Image (cartoon, rainbow, N blue to C red; front, side):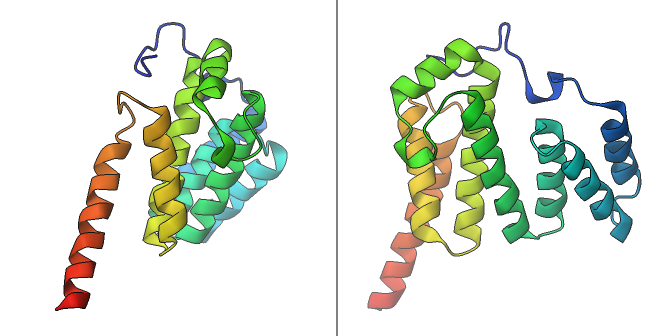
Length: 172
């Protein structure tokens, strides 16, 4: 399956959003960088905790504020929300190609979104020093994305190169 096939793909931002929640997201964007921005995003999250636009906004806020632990929590929540919608196993560890194929029949856009979040969570885990988890997440992504449309192979190559350099330095 080609994960770049967007024909008739519903994307996370296509989902209708209540006006009051949309206003909170807009206000948070307008006040980005202020303390008020986070509180507006958290209010939106309380009002629509499983809405993908809210989760993406909160994730981006934390990621770009370099609050990686918080960004990781949001990414993990997002994996759970999208995974339930796609009838995926409870955790990414048990995800198989057959699950992805069945998920594509529901929504190619959501499958791509799930895999992008898996990649992001893997990257953040690596940045936080959780090497085994981050590597396992990226390996799962590469296993499921045989054409490497999500770019997981490049991240794994960088990781392996860094591991080899660390190994060489320890031996020296």
